[in-house]
Amino acid sequence: MTLATLPGLDERFAEVKSVRLRYFVGGSGEPLLLVHGLGGAASNWVELAPALARRRRVLAVDLPGHGGSSALPAAPSTAAYADRIGLLAELEGMLPAPVVGHSFGGLVALRLAMRRPEAVTGIVLAAAAGISLRRLLARALVHAIGMSRPGRLVVPLRGAIARTRWLRYPVFGYWGVADPRALSPDAVEGFLAPQALHADTRSAGRVLLEDDPRTELERVRCPCLVLWGARDAMLPVADGFDYARRLRAPLRVIADCGHLLIGERPDACLDAIRWFLDRIGQVDELPVETEALG
Image (tube, rainbow, N blue to C red):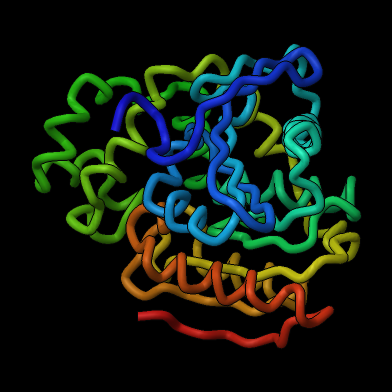
């Protein structure tokens, strides 16, 4: 895999409201949008996007200021990120569509659904931010990822980290994944490579800390699925229960899995996402349930 790309998907660029967005499109069928988290990029979906593209037309974007996308001229709120994603998907003829959002990307997906309810047919919240970021530890981690960008320090070593399992522990251990050995070499590349490309993750970190969606979640009209790692040290699984309760959505918890669940346990994530996508077109409201995935 070359620097921060998605195998099997076409790399494209588009100018959207004064931002040059880099994104990837591939597959055929009904559309599906993938939105990464703070300090990430479209390449974070390297384990999932190609598999999802076997049944769907997939769009995975580098958020403004992340990866190969230019920074926002101004970032007053999370809505500024959501608006660009919506306009890009519209430009590609991929609306309405369900959205899978990881961490900050989950919050962006919620804001998009609130602002353009006709455009979002369903949301998968994969370890979504927005509930417990008032905690001191969570705020410190967001500051480190968004402001100081520690990941750029290990970019030159990413090849060795991808090949050597024990080297993954100081990079991904505790905060990111429950078992760094579970990350594939492609997943390691997908998380680390874009760190060299970021233009502005500080703005995203700031608006993330300022955004509290809890009082507005009743505005989300589409079906939702909440997906969480049981050992998420950054955003605890209690946040998943809170989102599930407020959205009246099913919750799936992945055992022995941390915050970067889309790379650590892609098979379990893929099963849950496909289960959700197969059902959102059949019923208006999914049953509220909690399930643990091994």
